[in-house]
Image 1: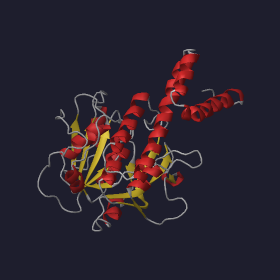
Image 2: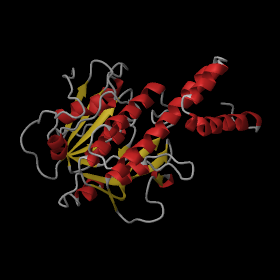
Image 3: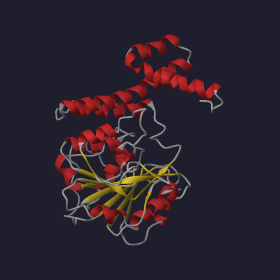
Image 4: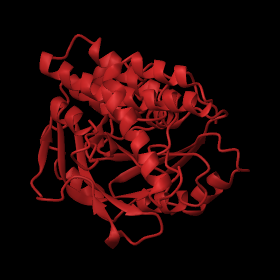
Length: 338
């Protein structure tokens, strides 16, 4: 299927279908060359009784329909599985927006094509559906590819199991990378999202983003007053793969993430404290861009150009020097060559 023109991130998507039940869930799966994992993802979604729709969007995989066929094999013939396709590769945001437009349930659950859900997850989250939250999230169980779930580690609840109300400031702060703490970015979460909230504020995924698109959507929602609840793990399994885009990103992807923060800063709806935190998050993204620019010049033996990258913003010097120190340690300390 060819996608119709998509709404801009802050324009309402057209409503689809009749009034859905208040506890119905559409599970959205964007897939690109996912023949090896999509069947497991689809089966896990169809195993959730609350999933009234499972919408798979093949993002122009170009794999001879292998991804689509693998998704179809997992169909339980309940009539809940819908498979759509984009004619050109447009990224996960575009695929998800199409799925959301073509679905009707009151709640939307995003499931990555290489992840899966344990039985009972949606029901446990929907136990909070009457408490006026717009995003209902459980912790992620991060499991190395090929390992059993029992060997996974939770993203957030490591020291206690006390549920958290996540506001805008708490969310942004969690996504700021700091050397002094382990990475626990709440932007990785896959909450249930109330469709009515998206429609009320005219929110959709930013189709210019292929990295941090979840962070961007949640941040915009929270900045508009959405309420988010985070509870301990109920069944979302995040499979950690070495070739994941979140681990292997390019300059264009990072620039789009930086632009997302710029839009928040320009929105006029942030407090002074909010602005300070968003600027800190933007700074960490800029650090990674500076590193890419610095190394590109260094590899071309353009020492003046590499120095110029740092001089444009000397606050980034510690980050660059730290990266160089790690390279030296790996090369001359017996570690893996970078």
